[in-house]
Image (cartoon, rainbow, N blue to C red; front, top):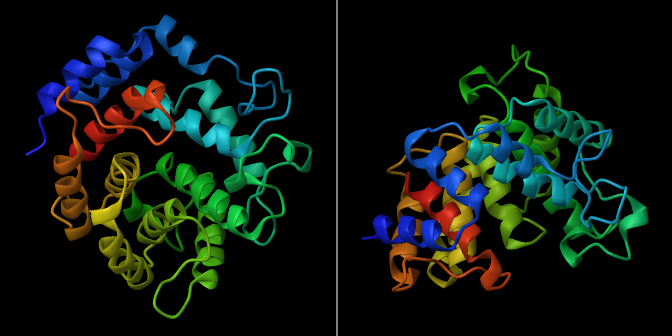
Length: 270
């Protein structure tokens, strides 16, 4: 069993004020102070979104999705900064349903976000559409009668991703695109294709890193995949196996991000 109390203790001991506020919101729904929210939102650009580097004036799809992943754990997606970021994100979608980073970011973008790269395009597409879906009403409102702000964006992205899949659900991109795309398809009511991807993900879970495992389970739970779903349960079992004695889970991006990974794992267990 995952030791949730040890994980909580790790975040309290090693997290900053925003991390601890995220923990409080995840565990008890406690709303953060205005000062904490402003700190979490800091660095947003006038037209919406966040840059990958503080020195840049060009918003990044990848960086904006990451910041939204923090703000959702603070209950802050309805605030003006997050709403502006979501509007900007929606405006960056191509007529074909895809997202890419601005070409000016090519020199600084990581491999998974390189403008013009087909694998990066798939990843950014499902990542951006996933966050537009998370910010939308519950999935039961999705469909032909959906009238929320980003219904068209989400539907178009889901169809574009579905068109890219192989006959057994193989996706032409990074591992993370698999669970984000799986969540997106589930949210969109494309359950058969989502289930195909789940089969592949289930085979991969035993070898996944703690960070990937936590992100997979958290993403599926955010779009309403059942608590007793077999892939969610496999991921939680993997989290049990990979939790450190100090209560944390190791990040793929270095020790400085262990708190973020641990918070994601806590989200995955809820």
